[in-house]
Image (cartoon, rainbow, N blue to C red; front, side):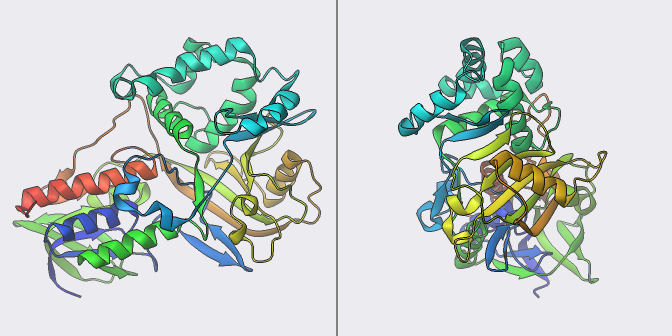
Length: 423
């Protein structure tokens, strides 16, 4: 391994790979050190009994504006969910769908929501008051007054069954936030992305995205070393010193630390990055319905925040056509551990089927699934954290794939400028 580089990037997640490619394209020598045996960070995939399982529930939204600058979305072969959500109620599954993108589902929506209060005009008006500004003036939304999501909903008049049965469990799962104290400005921007694009999964799992970014970084001249854990990055002289877990000391003119929230403080010596966790179960479920909508439990009768029949969305995730179901719950260190059996029974109850034939394929406890987006929202943190030491990742911009790729490119440009690299 070379002892000196222009830049060492610590972490081969999305932000690190985008940073590496950007720096290499600016004419700098770049070495990426990744502690795992594969690239991807939180975006990883494996195969169990022939089923293709992501590490946790993963979605890619093609509406993210910066993603096409760094990835070939067509090559990812995104398999998209349908634009709506199924809601388990006491009388069955009700459908809430976007009539613009799902005109054929409108009749089913009207039929299944009758008498539920989910389409209460007063609540819909409140939701429009809350979400509307992000659709018509996203720039102002980014810098407007902020408040916890629950307080902003109260002020806008977002109440009733739609909030309790749909919005709360759905966004608890999206944000990994049990109390919905997340910045409402961040959630407005997130909802805007949901309305502009329909999320999906690559045909063979989310790993296709970091694999593509790694290939592009390699083609630009960056080198990626796997299985190399970094203990600490510190300024030294006119550059930086990178100490690895196996006792080596590497030097570079600069370092980009692009690690997850849990590793950022130990590697940099900076403050801890608060984060929240999620648990996802993967079940072989022979009797699961052929539904491409995400489902939530409006009765709130179990631990899950959402579930989906992933093989209905992306048939290639199943080796033989047997339905593959994901089920996700909040991972709260202060709460009792959710058992596999509780997750299995709740998922089957949401779908309205018997769980007797369901088999657990895998369980993913992702303790640091998402950085906390607290009030007031800080959309962009400084690139540099110490002389010669820079930080990238979705915890430096916004907690999303969009935030990760934006951060990687933004920080790389700052490093290149500071090092005097060509434009």
